[in-house]
Image (cartoon, rainbow, N blue to C red; front, side, top):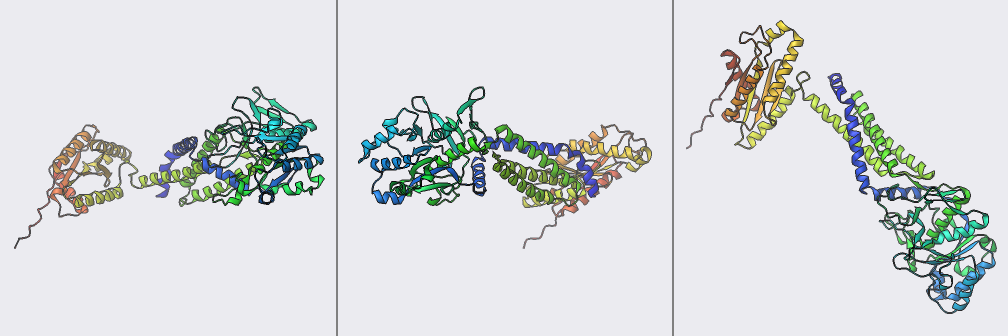
Length: 585
């Protein structure tokens, strides 16, 4: 039997996988376009960052951190200008490439303000900060409007995490401003002859030494309609605070720092104190994140500087998002391949129902591994939407195959109407419904081709098969959509008519006989007519409530016997004997 089923499935072999794969791919891309998978794609990217092997500490940077120890020592925040002035001068004596002060200094903080202003004016490699978006914060007045100011605005995704770096952005007056990290990187790279230059027709791509920066688009990687104002790139983190050399603010204040730690480095001064709340969620923050897993803004800016320097000088691969069309192409390719492979396995192996899910699990593991390897090489390839497409395609393909298989098991292979097995199941179901609701009728029309043995003997079995096919099609077209037609025996057909009384069943039987006669199939050996005709037996459950479902078919067979005894090419009914009434005492 299985071999016959497999042959019958051949007809669907080419079109079903194509339809399933295409439908799932379209649905997945539509869901992707609405942002259904965006948070999950971000979470997958975050897990890649956490799984990535630790990178070497960037020796070009030094962080001067202000934590709770400094706050307790100075008993004040903001720290007084005198303390900042002393630390900057101490660092400058050791000849750093650049000093970045990641502390807002738009207002004087006595004591020591005058001295600090002079230090700001006379330290050419000192970069101050400002905030240009939201509620702006002005830079130190001494260096305002110069190239010694960079903004420290950060881009937060919808889940509150920082995955993007902002290199430039217009201020409230529309003037293009450079970020704090870009200013510091420029001071480091310019003396080395590594200059920032615009590339491409529109100058949107930036060349900086061995690096080529391409601005992030709204629908790249796992982003959907992301706000990409300014010049944004994906932030390819080196790591958390432990991936950078660092000394405490107090160590520098007391001049206890080695000159070798400062010389020719980019030095960033800023807060890491929890109480100051200059902390952000990053890919290194786990879903149920304690406060200790937030990263200070100082470390975020250090990562951006490190990313620029490593790309420009070392050729370190940057994190590049897959374009939207690439994601869609990947989804369509994956869905199509999964549909074809699943269908092939299902149709060629007798007990292969579990096989597609097994290889799909292996394929999903391979997809995750491949995406992770691509991440290590600098590519962000979405994984959630392709995984969804993969598993959905396999599930739908397997379900479709199961549906086709069930349909074949319940279908007569010659006439394409129901078979005896399907008839028995349908009859039991509607009979149960009929009895559970006493006012519902069920009727049956049992048909037999008149003198069909003579037809086969005269015209041959191939012609007999074609005759049965035409009759089955005609009977199916003669009943209503809710009725069920099956081949009950060799040349017998049955029509099960739910919610049909005897009068309507007689009309349907009459229509079946007329339509078959109207086919004008020649039957020279018939003793009834020169064309093929039917004899039909009609019975209704209203008159046979004392019977079971199988007994109703037997009653229809008795009616069919009456039709044959009366000369064939007609229908007859059978009325069951009434149920005896019990006497009432």
